[in-house]
Structures are given as structure tokens and as C-alpha cells.
Amino acid sequence: MTGAGTGTGTGTGTGAGTGPGTGGGGFPRYFWTGRRGSVAWAPMKLWAPILMTIALLTPATGQAKKSEDFRHNYAQVWGAAIRLIRVDQGYPIKDRDQEVGYFLFDYRDDGRMYPGSVELVRIEDQGGGPIRAVIQIPAMPSYIERMLLDKLKRKLTDEYGEPPPPSKKPEEEPAPPPSDEQE
Image (cartoon, rainbow, N blue to C red; front, top):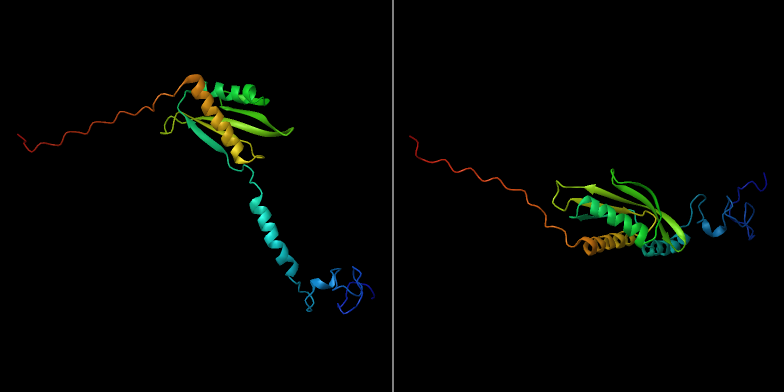
């Protein structure tokens, strides 16, 4: 069988493929170390630091959602969030449900549209505040979500003032200690 990919790597040609000058299997001679079947790692060692640097320097996309707790009431946060996204930012709202507490919108950046969502969750039983706003734009860096939350916070304060302080639950008075006098 001639040219069937069984070259020994001892030829002197420079062509690619399965003929002389290749290490067999169509790989150039420099990939082979002399023992058939073992690949030299030298080219990969050169590329590994470059690829690692690129991976570390590339900004991460917003894989985690950003949230913030607000002490304003639900209607105020809902209205301010809708106005922020639709009126102030000019992003189209695709779907909304005030009762469930979410709306979907398209974030616009450099002429491209990226899907995003805003969720409002009532959390009265927790100490942070009565409403948690969660913004997600998965295709964008997380600082975009943080920026929109900061704008929502500023909008709520500008339109409704500082929120009321968190209400403290009345603590139960401790029972008086039993007296030593029993009659």
C-alpha cells in the first residue's frame, strides 16, 4: 500500500499529507517526537500562556444577576422601574406582569439588542427591605446591571424621597422572674 498514511517520518519531502516528510496521519514532521504516536507539546506550550492571557483579559459577561433591596412600596418600585427602562433609557418593553412582578425588555448597545429582565420580589419577612429588584442582562457585563440598579435607586429617591426606616417588630417583654416567696 503506497500513500496510505503509514509514513515513518524518515522521508525528506516537505509536502503535507501522508507521503514522505510527514510524520504519518497528515501531521507535519515537527509534531512527532520520534516515537510513533506521541505528539510534541512544544507548539501547545507556546499557545497556552497566550490563550490564558486572552481569557483573563476578556471582560466576563453578566452571568450572575444583580439585585438590590428597596424600602419603598411595591407600586413605587414597579412604576419607577418601568419608567426608567422605557422612558428614561428608551428600551422597548416586550412583556410585563405587574401581579407576578417582572418585565422583559431589550437592552440596546451599539445598535444591537440584548434581552434583559427586571424582577420585583416582595421580601417583607427579611430585614433588607420590602422589595428586592433583580436585573438580568445575560449577554452584557455585570456592571451594566449594576448601573441600571443605581439609576433605579436614584430615581426612587428623587421621585419619592428617602424611604421610611425599616419597621422593627415589637419584641416580646421577658416574663418576670419567679419570686422566691411562695405562700
